[in-house]
Image (cartoon, one colour):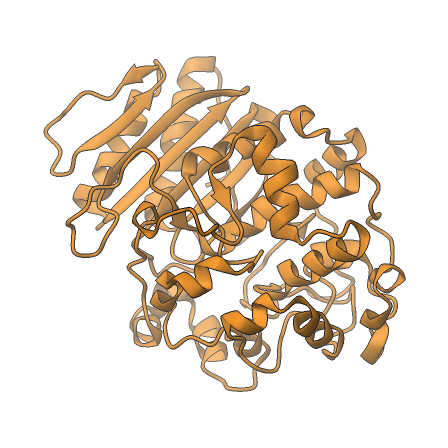
Length: 412
């Protein structure tokens, strides 16, 4: 690895790049110069080795504190990919199976027509349990008995398996309760002990008390009016649905008792487990995990059958494939997003990952043995494919193409 040398950039860029990946550092610097970056980190693993580890900018909106090597940041739905690894480990250990009915492990879940919903349908965002009627405080989220009863009492939003819609928050909580019923641990604790600890990851679903707030970057978040001003990149269909009070979009996304996304900077929301939305960690740790998953997950004891499920082409619902919640063409499997017409990434359908609101993105590309993670603290206003991460992703693939001496057909 080559240590990044000081350059003429307006913002100091730190870290290392492997020979052949120098141009990725240049694009990372361009994000600060040309794409309004505040603070960010980027990490890439290939065949188990770190080839990019960069950081720069500021971890606070006042620009008083620099982003440092161990700075962590909340990655919103990027959390789903980390939680998905925990579920993959649980499946590999036989705690439950993909085609099990959730109610077989959690009898109360069967209420209100949910008796036949399977684990696979939940992980594929096809279960029809995307919404909550009400908004949750940190105290309610921390009360596992209260949350379990609330989730079990929810009605179906659509017939399971017939449609798909982004289970923006509920996916993680339903998966956590399934784990709690079969293993005894919540998803956050299971992830910490069975995924983060073996791989020595600095990533948390529920920030421990001993981690100081100074180590976590402050989110520069957008508000509802910003969405209205950016219809071109946020999608008019999505924004209109979000502002319709009883729409499935509104009820799926507006489930936290906050007034604005920046409220997630508070310790109360950082400390509780929201396994779909409030994971906090480093890009290095995310890329390390995705790199491990891209190469088979041996260090985590991943079963070959589970790896095959992760890399298989997604199975669409029996009805329309347009996402009911976010209004675009999507594809999901095993708790991850898969390449789709409106969100292409990776070199094949074997790729899997999760984008986060505001621009973060982590994914695995098994065809290349690649793990990628980008984590900014200034939240952008693109429904998919924030220009900052697209530029970085393209630069990485161009470097691989030059190194390998053959064309890499990456979806971009």
